Length: 117
Image (cartoon, rainbow, N blue to C red; front, side, top):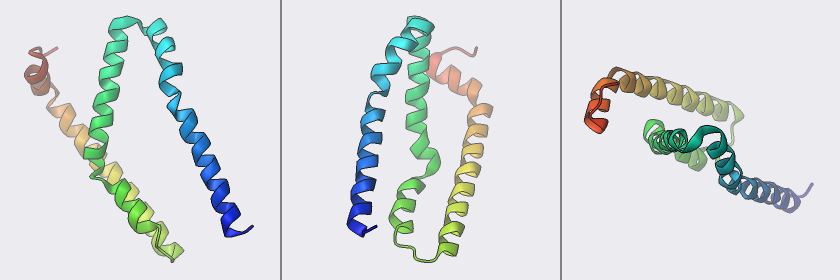
């Protein structure tokens, strides 16, 4: 398969995937509001927004760095080593951040919501 045909095929699949992901909200909102109700949907929405905000902070932008630096890497051994290192870093930083949030959950609740429950 020529390089051009492979490129066109990859662009096509990425376009289809992006198009389908854009309908996530249209499909999920009616289902979630029906089964969760307005109050629980609000809680779900706040959790989703918080996780979307915290993700890049926890990952320290390593996903962007991986895309930038791994695309030019020629050696498969170095490529695999870099992927494993990044995965390990993401797991460790996620565990550390989750532990900190868990330990400070009472104080954060009091600070943000004026409630310790």
